[in-house]
Image 1: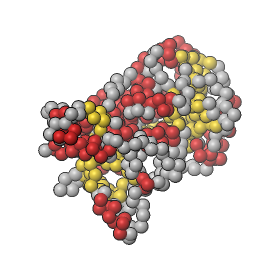
Image 2: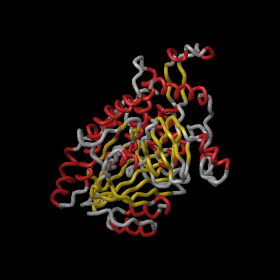
Image 3: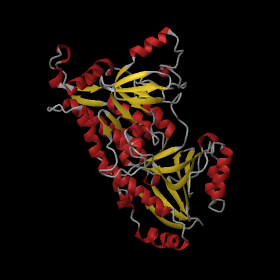
Image 4: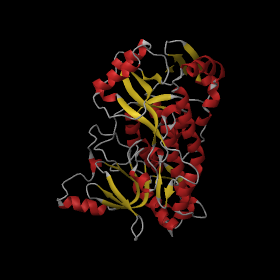
Length: 467
């Protein structure tokens, strides 16, 4: 009965949403998506709450993982002949693109489009192609041809060309804002409900999962997908520990050159002692940069952009001037400082990715350090794998249950996620060495003579089948 009930989610969505048009993302993000932010004493507000108190699929978090999951569900193509032959009006159809409706809850008042950029390798681009937004994004961002590694005094240690190592490799740095807006544009109107912060999650005896929001709204969901980031309340409810601080913090920013930035399309790394930095061109006018430094504790949060710039420049004051110039060209609203954290999903110790019909995606499940550039890529992978598993729960002849589909998703993703998390952590530890003798060996032996880029990028080989 569970599988049959779940089939209705897809069928109802197909009938109601398969012909919906994509719309341009509104400049005013407080558009009609804001659903439940009106005066709660207004009778019309109460009627809205009653009408939307039950949902088939609720996604918590409108970041990259949440929006990619919603778009993946909306993009599913399924063979439904065996299910729809009983429906006279559409019995001749075999392939239907199902707009599987999900409601995305976001605690902020609009898409959180601040911040910098993220690097996507070919595994991330394969997912973006599968959900129909890859070509849109390619036109806006530069393809990165290779990488150059230097010491803090500007001496070149090694250079690579990505295509020499792997002809199929594709690397671009993408603005987070543009990626989020592009994904949001693929969803039907009213798919995202802003100002909807989760307060509690519970399992009522009547079935489903109950979500209570800070504003008092209560939603009963058949399936809950937690995409609520590294400090996920849903992950905590499922028994996961808080992510662990790894001993490094990072400044990040997005330099802006209105008359055109001067850099070649390469990733530029600079390695020092307990300190490293890098920059990568994003577009003809923007350059992403970072500075990663050792610190025993995360320290107090700093929100003053002037102070952030001052501290970042102080760390690299004697380094190549190009880096200092990029920092000077950085608008205040794009510079941040964050502690780096991860969570190691030990087998037989860590909770599973799903509990009943509640499941985690992206950083909510497997936060990892950015040393391999795989945090966003893995979140995108999660999204399409989960969407396909849920689709298979319907189209499979054995009609597996939703719980089985979610469990299968976790079983498939864990062998990929766990090693990547550990590898990213270890790479970061090596690059943050402080001992001068060890750093000398790294810079004069390991990087110039031993490192091969091809094996280091094998993890980007992800087979993403069409949805």
